[in-house]
Length: 256
Image 1 (cartoon, rainbow, N blue to C red):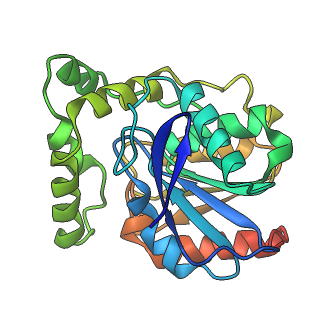
Image 2: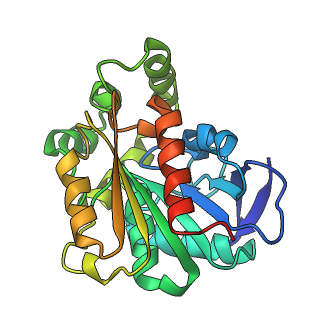
Image 3: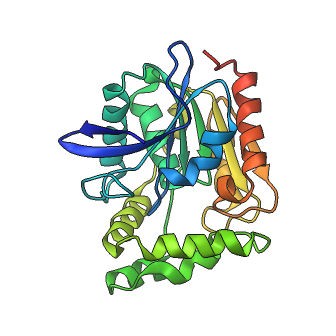
């Protein structure tokens, strides 16, 4: 998988297939403590698009440091897209990545063809007990049980635990602070891009009411509820998520 230099740092990204001129690009951005690997089922399961999922600074194999500010991440993703000469692209984001996507649509609307928001909201307040634990240097590994549906396979949860243990606590401290301070409830209606809002019906981190609010506030949006899924719907029920994305892209004619 390739690297590209962004702001003097090597940035790693996953690519679904060889880039093809003339096809629209979907750029996927992960959530707090995540990596581009969170989108591997989408990179392998969606056809007819250039598919890219980057590791944000300080995450996965990317150099740099995690940021405690969504705007910093927003600008970084924009620089990344410009460095790859993507042109107008479709922006997909999960949780914190959803916040980044929404900020991109507010600031760079002309560069965004459409939005795919998974398990996110116009405001992402983090549970205070998690923030307090992080401030005492306690790793949030115990919170993993809140990320998934009770029906999610043991294998997926075990893999999640392994991943979380390998993420430095400083990354979670920065990311969760960025999420906690994110709030565009007074500006969300200014986003004019067509949007798909996806939520796991058992999401405890960003409950269904968050996505419902998003869908009602965004002028051109539709919502898809994923059954038997929690906060990581794209990993728990990839077929449902992929079908929702494909249907949305077809409906709004975002193939090219």
